[in-house]
Length: 147
Ligand code: SF4
Image 1: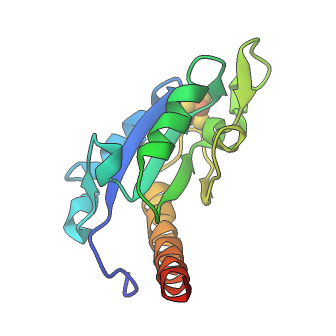
Image 2: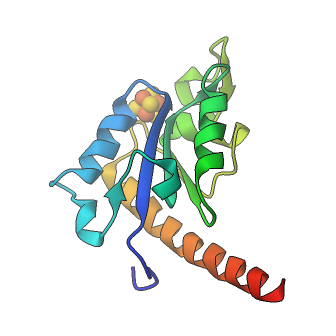
């Protein structure tokens, strides 16, 4: 994580999962894997978050919530789809009210497949997300200078 210039804060939302991936997200945050040692902090406030971790598929009810959380986050921001349900709806693909993966609602930067997604894959996705966050931050700064 040599490119990380700040401690990223993450917000987690369970769109519509079996909770398997949510347990793995919590495992990544808890002392066993302890992502907080890298300065990664879990927040409940979208306005404080740099990275949006979404588990589960998007359906008719939660799509507006996913969009609302995303829209409340300040640029630059990164979205990570955690688990195959968040990537492409997974086993819920054919359910009557399921729209699809998270990218049906908002732009996704990193896909972390798995059923359930392993904590190592979540941590790897966050590290990838940090690189993307840095690129977006530089692009934003360049845009401001050019304006
Ligand atoms: S990917 Fe598997 S473990 Fe994760 S929410 Fe979907 S069904 Fe559950």
